[in-house]
Image 1 (cartoon, rainbow, N blue to C red):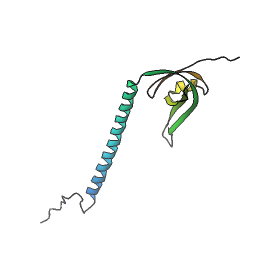
Image 2: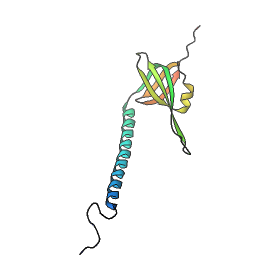
Image 3: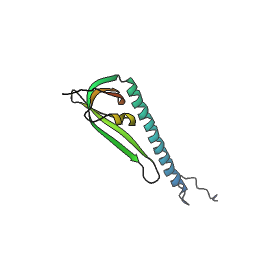
Image 4: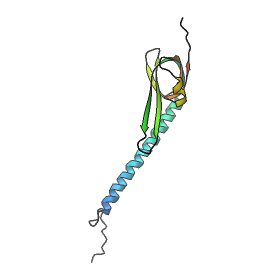
Length: 130
């Protein structure tokens, strides 16, 4: 006598079990990705806090903006970056705020203050050549 209920993992009638399996796998993948991003953000934050604050003489060698999103009715997001070159020719690109980005000019020389990958400030050193 059949009750009409299929207790197996893949019901043969409408594929509901297969849907639930795919739904569960997708939920686990999305949840895992979100957890990964949270952990990665915490590790970066922790690493930056453990790094010493550096004040080094450098020159601004490049600036760039990265625009993401903005298609259709969605708004866009703009990130601002500056590349600094130190006296030993080593370069470092840091994300800077929109307000600071406007005051930094390629070719400027000065003191960069940063902590790990965190931009803290840039003080231009004026040099007047005659």
